[in-house]
Image (cartoon, rainbow, N blue to C red; front, side, top):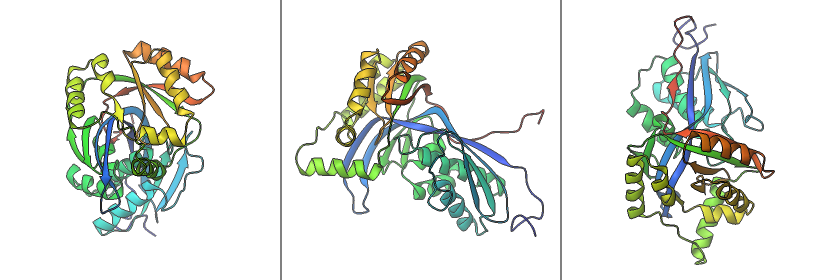
Length: 317
């Protein structure tokens, strides 16, 4: 029996990496008729990666491994599975592929790890199946799969509008961050629901993340000066995340006490992102936070890295 519906020979496996993201600013608008909130956000991709290897198979399979794989579904509940199935459907072919997903990005942590997996799977299957889809075509599929998947395709630094899927690239220098993942997880829908509840009760503490602040933030990114950027970081979801996970106040306070230029909950949390002045400060801050009993892990990362990318075989390989 052939391994795919188009060939009796197996093409070489394809490996793609995709980065986690943080939100430097997140302004959440009203609920839209489609059930999503209108967003204006500044994304930045950081060098914490999941990787996806795809190879020809008789049917769609998903194998999970890596330090963050525990408890993840290996079925249509996984975004990587859904990405392969959607691409195959639109290409008019069977989803005859084995997906080997190595999870390093924490789940339900505000880092868009599932979106990274979907983006990597789209790129990998597009190459494996020889579909030749350009980025624009993959972007449209990514937007169907989830609000953050399109950014995981592109990476770098970008303004996201709509649900976050409409992207405008922003010029930015390299930035140094520390990701401090608190114990536990937060459901994105639950955090948005809490924000809606706070707004209905008139208790929302609206942060300074409107149009003017986003323009200032874009200008600060162009200068590449972290000290100028620090006071402009903002997240409308942070009060809701703190209401559901009050222990995050301790994590944020610890980062500031240890010398971070600024810190905020990334997206819906519970990961906190701390801005450092340079690589050395990021390393020392991560080491100090890693010793905090409230942190599951803390690691320095570099912001502004590219999105989903094929790992090309080396000449020796």
